[in-house]
Picture (cartoon, rainbow over the protein chains, first blue to last red):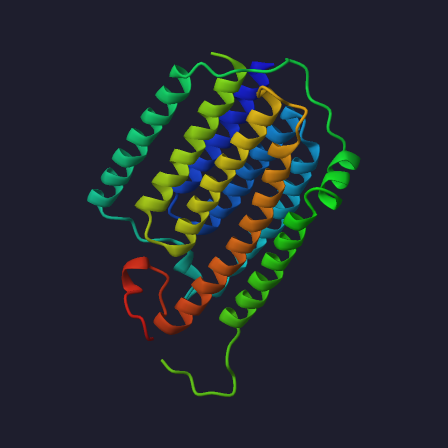
Length: 169
Length: 103
């Protein structure tokens, strides 16, 4: 059981690490799709099927397309998808900060006696989730809907070009 | 190492990869992608604690992960719209060059 988890984690972490180190931003975005797919495999492995499908729909489907569109809309010419290398100081300090945070988190996780429950997978059907979302959590669902609507309207207002006015730049 | 600890270690490493990416790159879209990775790592923790935690009958972890995915989708849409708006004014997506408030 742990072997599958290690395999999923290895796929996810390798894809994410390679994506964050590549120079070509299109390759980074495509590799991050693999990493997000690994996260959804983890959800499937843990028995949260609905979250796994939501992850595939939202990240692998929607967010990756939005990212690719943003990359293609913000390049000056065909070669502009290759990012200039960062300064050495910046990369080294980022690696130092990330490494120390990783050491801190991993040692805290390994050093804490965590209370674990029963070993069998908890059963949670989509029907249970629907009952919860329509009943006790209905306020959260409505607020999430309002946030999504407002965010989409805001995104359209921000990204839309004002064709009637002279371009300020 | 228990399975819960293994899950938490994997999500911590994913969080740190996202953190290093967000700190070390100056391309705005790559910084946003690093933040998305950190959000994903946090969601993995919710699911891990729901699956292996002390009271797995409560569906709180799954519900929180669903809401968090919804908010992350909104964040990605607004963030990339901001990137496009900044690019239209500055003709650049490097974070160091976006240093004027009125473009």
